[in-house]
Amino acid sequence: MIKASDVKELRERTGAGMLDCKKALEATDGNMENAIDWLREKGISKAAKKESRIAAEGLTEAQVDGNVAVLLEVNCETDFVAQNEDFKGLVSSLIKTLLHNDVKTMEEANKLTIDGGSETVEETIVNFVAKIGEKISFRRFERIEKTDSQVFGVYSHMGGKITAVVVLDNTTDEVAKDVAMHVAAMNPTAVRRDEVPAELVERESHVIKEQVMAEGKPADIAEKMVTGRLNKFYKEICLEEQPFIKDSNTNVLNYVKSNGGEIVSMVRYGVGEGIEKKQENFADEVMSQIQGA
Image: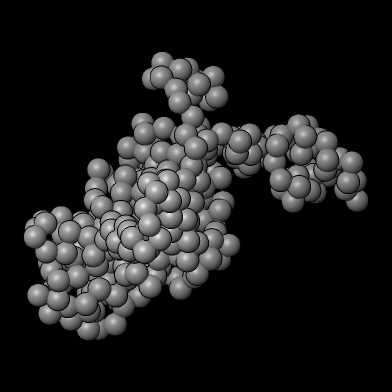
């Protein structure tokens, strides 16, 4: 029987998860040193030690298969690894797996097997960490479905640093791609006003009111100024109201309408957005890789 104290000790020595430590001890009849080797052989110990490191580089990618599209983001620590063919192959394998399996959550996605093999997504990433020598994080994905009358627009920018997927109804692939390019470039918050998060509108309204009050305007004038500035805010963040990137004389809504279509949805991923990045110069980065290998 494996002792809880042994599991605890193995976890402290390797940084691996409790369940993995228990499996290692069971596989080695409780021998601590052999259990450490078992974890190292599986790549688990090495991967666990890198979990505290920041992975804010990487790739976004989208692929379409019939009426299904998948957009995902996979992160690594350096842009050097992001451009590695093995890393790109990992991203491609993940996206194909997600295209062929109807899953909604990261938990479900991590349990899928890659390319019909025996390894799960989670196990594949752990083994890849051991091979590549950097923290790798399968951060997020979106599985998007459309009807037969709808079209996907996909646009990737800067070699996968930004990728956008849009769904349009009753128009052409070319129009959809134009809108996806606009979304990638202009980063709208929502398709239309009623989709803007209420807390975002409240925060912006509060800021505008404070600004107007500081200007000492009469109440009736102040109210009109708040409404006017809020309208400007919507035009900056709502896809339909933004000036179209290829023709600033019209907005995106009118561009799509003039081509017989309607915007249904959009998703945009930017690599590392929301992740606090550590600042390093190139020499430090190279040394950190050598020392961490």
